[in-house]
Length: 393
Image 1 (cartoon, one colour):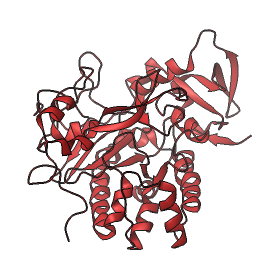
Image 2 (image 1 turned 90 degrees about the horizontal axis):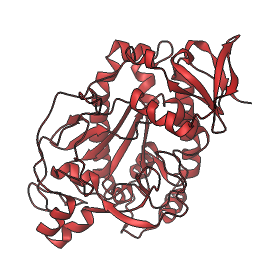
Image 3 (image 1 turned 30 degrees about the vertical axis):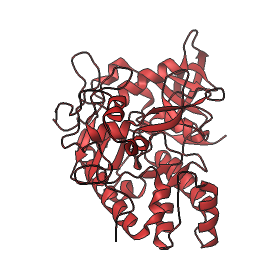
């Protein structure tokens, strides 16, 4: 069976993952605090309040079509078959509407309909770009980059203006790389997360940058995952529960399509399969590019870089069962199954321990956050609000 190397040079099966991050290891685990920014909300209300107070044409910017996970409550893309947060089946979940969280962030909306604050774990904000930690935290540095200038539902709409779209992606990726620098310049983080000497250039080449279609939030965002994946999420990727073919679209693929400078007329109902087929006929083969990206970036980056030390974990998980383990002759050897141990619960606790979302935590041990510093006005078109895409020539 296929094997992988983890921290300390230990070898384990790729069908297994380490779990149960030890309390004794938490104090020395390197975290990277977000910028010390704490500003109040601009709109004292919810997305529903924004909808009521503004013109009907703003409504498409405010809501998403989603499947809500029956276990953890995460809004997932309506084509998903399992929750990409907890792994629960979405087979029986109905398609419903949820609040567009990213629009809420950009408008400075105070509260979700369920009452929790729409604060963000801010990493960088410019006039045109907002960058923040993704709540899923598949890697210790997992960011989202969104445009503060345009309302663009998803990456398909970039095809309306290829040249302008490439300029937009240049800016988004440049700012995302800038937001990555505090991690890479943190000596403890770099030593703890990476196995051996890894250059900035190697890290940049292996960033897992992509778009999802359909997205869970209908405001164009670059998913920016700086490897390595945390243990459970790498297992999810190994079992093809992340970066799905037909849903995950590498930024490199989208760039190659845009570089053709062949516009494509897009509406909300345009089929992604038609887009894939059209640009394949022009020489950009999605299936080929996705396959190479999945193997060489999504999986290989963690296999090459990861430094998760077995000494820091209580358990190893295989086939959903939790085991004690030992490292013998440099290999992880499973012991007895741990009675009463639940892999999902253990993984949820590990997420809190390993993530940088909301660092530093507050006095209650919960993630901290802020609202946007320079919010958009809740309008579509006109100065100060969402600009229309595509922009006028």
